[in-house]
Image (cartoon, rainbow, N blue to C red):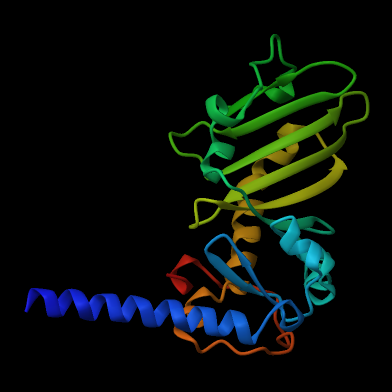
Length: 229
């Protein structure tokens, strides 16, 4: 009985793998399907080869998604990418493993924020990396800020259930970090939500995914981790 159960489990796993391979062989980039690490995403538009070569999905390069990003009140015209990397992406959210940033000596008042661990360098431009001061932060931001006029570029990174993926938004503006910091968790949640809405891994593994045009009347909202396995 035990050997039969093991055999059945192996058969089910084998069938799942074959179904995924079948989808991969039948459909591809021209159909809008891209694999990043162990997740599959449906961009509902032809995908350039360089997405795969660089192991990322620059969502702002897909016209219908770009339109949604441009109209989003939180993101504005942010550049949003889904990234894969060979190492555990949780290194992104650990100063000791992926940092290279030191505490700032005598930081200006607008960089002394309760609840944030902020490190970086001072000069004509202030370059900082900041994370919520919690044991396992789920978002991180890197900013370059010109102190004389607060011309600012920030990269907000959000983790993803696949530990070798993360989602990133590049944002520009004129604000102090003190002004921008309250938006960071909401930005991270929003870009992660967009990725969830495009994640079709379950359908690919079940062999049920099929190409489709961009969905109508969508803002890529109301998708959470519960929609993926």
